[in-house]
Length: 161
Image (cartoon, rainbow, N blue to C red; front, side):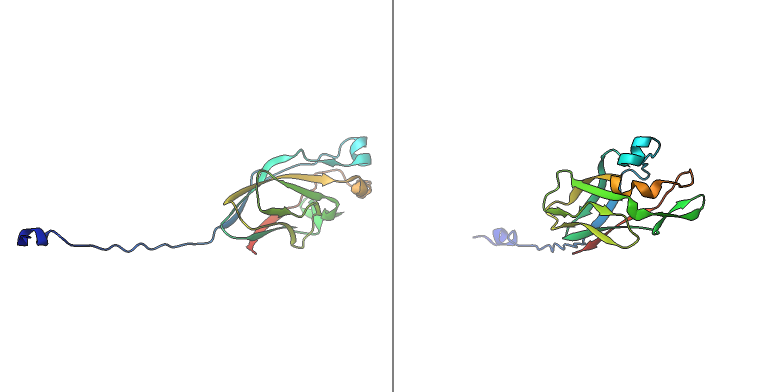
């Protein structure tokens, strides 16, 4: 072999570094929802939002627990806190094509963190449909109340499992 041919043989190296960061996030697609209580049937049988398709979108690369809580134990009314408890409303979730999840609803709203989904994160993005409902068993709590718009903030939190 000629010396010229040997000069063309060589090698080079490159190092590939991977920087993995766990992704855990939750997004709410409908930031404000309403449950009307404006007919006798609502006060007799309860009422709910329509099913909110893909209301919650979870992005996760690891097993997680999704929790829900409200800012207070009672609804706000006219810039103050009322005596109407938030636990008269239930949250119901259904997975929308998500796999590897365990949905733990219906759950009554509360100011205490409540687990509503556990997942082993087989998919990076998981969607959940939601319904907020005043069940018939809670309608008596809505009688003899001041007319107005009662509100609370619902807070969803995702944590590693």
